[in-house]
Length: 577
Image 1: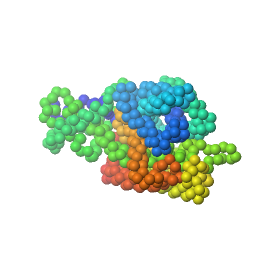
Image 2: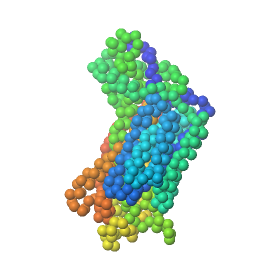
Image 3: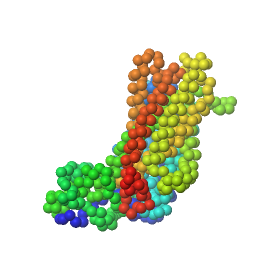
Image 4: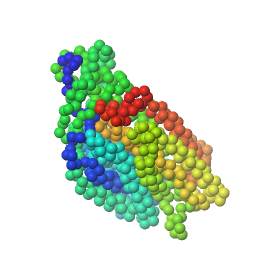
């Protein structure tokens, strides 16, 4: 064995394109639409539960406001962390299609149990069964969330220019479909829950999900389904082990074990049911991992390559891709901690304000979340058809602005949202004081609920920028064998953010409870100081934005050999978007 040998190319963990994995008659929008429909139904069900959950907990189960808010955050958090396990199973063993199918069945079981818990279950068991159903839903979310979007995106072949262009705008339209499902639930299901009954409201979710499961199965012959080849995470560990074993090896004396030409030769090899290997270009970040590619004396004396001592260039670069995303993940946690306010305290604000439309119709406070969806329904097409072409002319970037810039705009909007919410809440409390309602928390303050419109609209805009930006980033920059995990990583940001928000609530409660009745997050929202709490979140978000900008400036996009149309300059180094 010498320094110019042709290595055995590892298939696990390589970057791929989707041009050889399936029949050319499969895939594209004609198959993606079936997956989108089941995702719309799943979002319809999730928001049909989460959108009004705090109302059920406080009004039916009679939990204190702060306790109910933390329970909502905890459930949303668990629902967003379980996808890490679901992604591991999908990428390593089950495949995305089977994982979606199984998780949808589990989710359906959860909705059935939820309906039973609010109808025929006896009162003394109702709360326990209700929470059991909630966490069965969380398990279903764990398999569905990380796989549905990735599986749908896999239907587009990056090796075909027309499908590659379609995938570029896919994420915008995918999120638009999610918003349609969520907004419909927030409008229709929540109205039924508040005005007809909880049994009928949750029963609607069961029916819609059952129909969606049938539709998903109808499209089975249209899907591009890739076969999992085992855990891609083994190769990640191999890189760290190999680099650690050779930490004292001088690369200038030994030479590189895997050269770029060898990778190209090996890239022509294919495995049935798997897409073609794509070669990653070498980057200069995390140089300590490059030692995993060095051939030392033990490698030279061996007849076969030991993957725990000698790794390919693709393996090393894929591990770098994962490491680069970790700081981005951390710097977006505060954003999601703020995002969950729309499920909790924003609703409690709206419940105390005038919500009548016409002589009889009373707008449900939880349905205010539909304003976010309506904003997104308008903003996504405007972003895709107006903003991107205009920005492209200015920046020359194919997407108008980079993924990281898009995320940063949303982080700034989250600061603005909390500042606006604080100002509006201060006005609401002053109005309650002026009309002598300060000690009557159940009274309706003579202030139109539409004062909350700006903060909900900003929430929609920040979703268009940051949420969609994160989805695209964690799909595009993850190794293809770990793209379900990439989706799970993005989703887990929402979950960990919910836990952080619960932690902030606990800290604020502990500190302000020392002031007697002036608890910032007390049950009497007229005497509480939600506005102070919102200002705290705005300041924390501002500090977080500064950290994000610093991290984003040092981020290097992945390099893919021969993918020249994605080249850009980032921090003085040529990178790929």
